Length: 251
Ligand SMILES: Nc1ncnc2c1ncn2[C@@H]1O[C@H](COP(=O)(O)OP(=O)(O)OP(=O)(O)O)[C@@H](O)[C@H]1O
Ligand SMILES: [Mg+2]
Image (cartoon, rainbow, N blue to C red):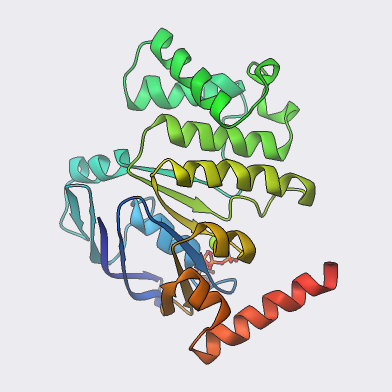
């Protein structure tokens, strides 16, 4: 069980997260939706302390971090239980596909190169990166392939919780479905996922719960289909309508 309690974060004097609570059962998938600037990325980054929250408690599989009081060692411990997938992949440009995955294993897990390579190959197979691309550098790969590598790197760490921040929003439209398929498969493996996404049909299908954030707070959360199809709050309704309008423009 992942327990997140009363996360608060300010930048300068502006309150960006205004006390966020979220519990996620092991193996569940939570989708976070909400308008630009509502604090979704900040919240994800606070969960694994890429950003330090000002207040709040985060418990993940036996690690418990209390904002402002926890030691560096405890934070590292929490970070080892999580993996982050970024909108813009964040791969090392000067490393090949397989080296990007191996690096996570040799540096974080302290595995030998041989073992790291074996696991990296297995993970890249899992995300369906063609074998002949394993030795390519990110700049010679498509966005979809780069995001597959980033997901393979996250999987290689064997995290209890994977945090994905709009993993398909930087992709060309024709590459989105392939990467969503990979995330679907990851969800089926039973890793707990928190994913920020604008892909509502994906959220409806894969997420157990949907959380709607606006202006630094959770406005509504509940079973995915209920929030998406029968939202209770006016702000959720307005947001879903605005997204659907965007879709109808293109389809
Ligand atoms: N490092 C920072 N310093 C100052 N302000 C920040 C910083 N990071 C984020 N903010 C502000 O916090 C607010 C929330 O940003 P955040 O990136 O979390 O939103 P978001 O919901 O992820 O938006 P989007 O959908 O556009 O990605 C914004 O107003 C943003 O300008
Ligand atoms: Mg964001």
